Image (tube, rainbow, N blue to C red; front, side, top):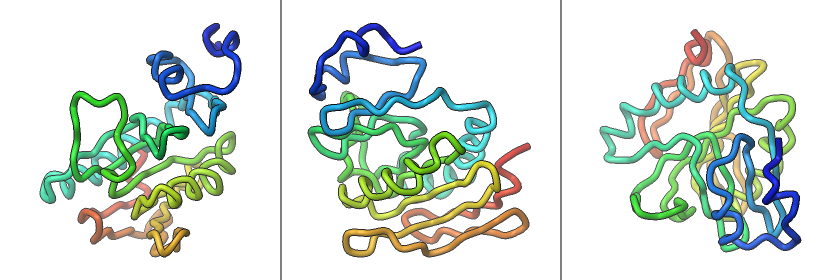
Length: 183
């Protein structure tokens, strides 16, 4: 159910209006004065995110990086997205949002209802914000794709499907085996 504050609010939405919503059952993101409202994540989605966290956490700890699942990521004054995870170089524990310039890697788990957003819109927005790495997991096929920022766009650096291994050497060291993302 969409909160009444959302339905009763006129456009445009400002960052302060967005942040005043607090936590909601849906994923609500701020995009250029409007809201992008998505469904709550499925159990399968959340288990995959947990598997990614488990795979990335040792490398983050070794590199003195912070791994955060589902956080407000400020791309600019009119764009706050909620990626499935981020790896940060620094962290302000008092902030409402993590700024894009502190993020080394952003990750999304794509499902059919969000596929176009996760494959097209979000990579474009993350690249425009200068985030160096984009990790995408295709939920249905358990395909993991690692993209690196090259100029203004991401370039696919590696892909792994079930039975294969995706090895990250940057921005943290990690090994992801897609079949291990689900129990």
